[in-house]
Image (tube, rainbow, N blue to C red; front, side, top):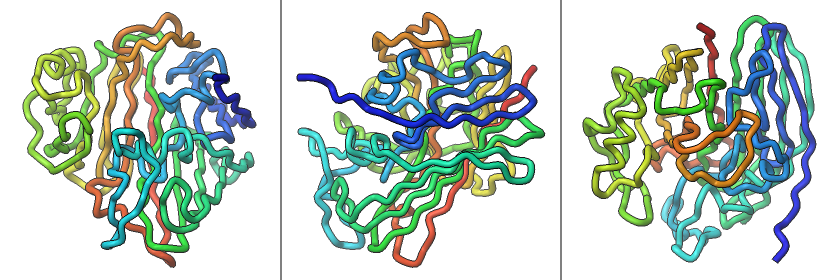
Length: 324
């Protein structure tokens, strides 16, 4: 079987402080993010790999990021979501989700910002989700600071569920092995994962091996997770933030070269360390093992995800990049 070839338009914005982003209309995604020409995120050399990969490099995720039962109920009404053989709808429908839909896109400048805005209208019933969903994704880079701001908006014609996110994989040159990164998550509670399906079934106080409240070396925590029975073998867990205000960073990634601070008004975040070792050539260099970390702000728990006609889904995530 011939693998489907995807096409996309590429739109770029930058500032005078060395930060540049290249974005794609397919999946309203971030193809590359560089500082002084050096990659900050995993950047496949082959753009077709970026577009078609089921690892969702830098793509917008939705309609609902994560895992849902195919027969999920929305306000008592049962849906029939697009799912795999396991009965799980992954990231809003896998290769038919928003990550693989072609958005319209424009570049603009406004005040202190250069930006790219994407728009896609998801038809009623697409991947089994009710309601026509009008989705707008805006990326902003300030002229006066090194930040990537992602604004996500949507409206619906029917009651539906939505929890958008982005699947950027941070891999900061030259510190490309995430073992040496320090991670802080402002969360004392996390989700409990159901065995095999990895559905989030309830909330618990973070155990020691998932406690990042004071900041912790990723290698130590990843080694502990790998040894702990019942866990997925890597960090791939949802966390519920203690505070809702976005004035303080909710997640901090500290490396020998720089610090990444994530500010967001989302209720929670899924944090994933990629250990798949798929044979992909990256602009970052010979990346292997624990090669990147995805910080995915999202709505958590599930009941927060209801969107009704007349309401506006509106959330923001801001990644502040601080050089040392």
